[in-house]
Image 1 (cartoon, rainbow, N blue to C red):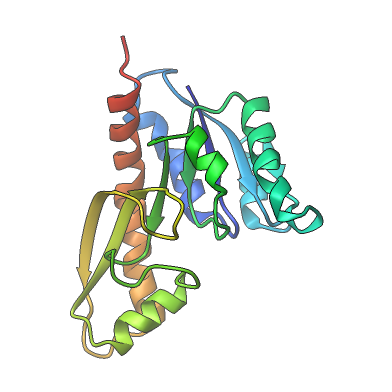
Image 2: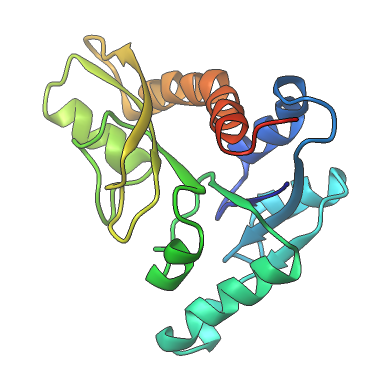
Length: 198
């Protein structure tokens, strides 16, 4: 099966997934076949090049919204993609694309959903909101992607303490640690449950 990773920025999670996924999956049962970004200057593009993985830039700004689904689907079909992993991808996925990949598109969110999700809640904005609310814990949530931001069925969560004097930067480091520790493993578990190796 072919996996696509979608990312908008530096690609730290994408890098970890590329590096560690083979250790969790039987030989050649799945391949990271494609990196997709909406940002032509994203660091994840260099990660794709170094790993010799094909990449595509979704130039959404030059096309009216009604054509976005076709752009996505053409790219995914061109590369024969079976499963999609969002790793710091900031654009909302069109409904037609979600319908084409039912329960085969996952995202990771840097908070314990359903709290601190939704439009505009990404990166430091999430951590700042968690700290401002006086939360004692935060964490990560892996979920299926649906038509709403950070809304799909929860697959996995892991948490960490929010300590006195915590900053958004220090909390971000804890959250990145959880992402790097768990995301690849949970992706592989889900893939093997959906595409069992014979």
